[in-house]
Length: 225
Ligand code: NI
Ligand code: MN
Image (cartoon, rainbow, N blue to C red; front, side):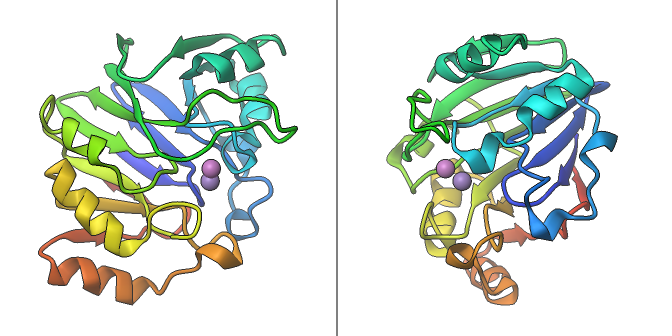
């Protein structure tokens, strides 16, 4: 599984011969100017919740690639009304796709579309593919529900928001790593706006002192597990 960080909460995951894009918010991200969205491939677009900083480029990318949109029922319905095809899920549900299994997990956050309409309840994803398991938390607070995940699977990597203010921050993310029984963490949802700027070295050191590894990828760089 190869995970490429596309800035903010956007990821590209290559696995089992397929490409999954997660929460594409690229074209309006000053920090991701070097990423050309027209060069991105996708077989699937996974959306954690309806906020603008997670869905901005979905329509463009779905049009470019013909990718299947996977999210909660409300978000999938929203995009189906625009003519796209999707696969609706809801919390706790798992579905077998051709690349592997996806589970839509709980998140403590909000989820409205940019016009204020209801975007369903926010979530995250567990992706099981090619013998590896990763958890993408979505925008969330630290939540006790994270403890349910290692009761059902063994994670190789957890992608957690660390920017604070809108989501959990560094200290909560370390506790989340304990709840998830996973010491390999990839940071996302930081630095994009003033409210979520973090000190990278301080964050890495804080994790290290707790016996955990925090990876902060430059935008456009990848990690393979
Ligand atoms: Ni959000
Ligand atoms: Mn967000």
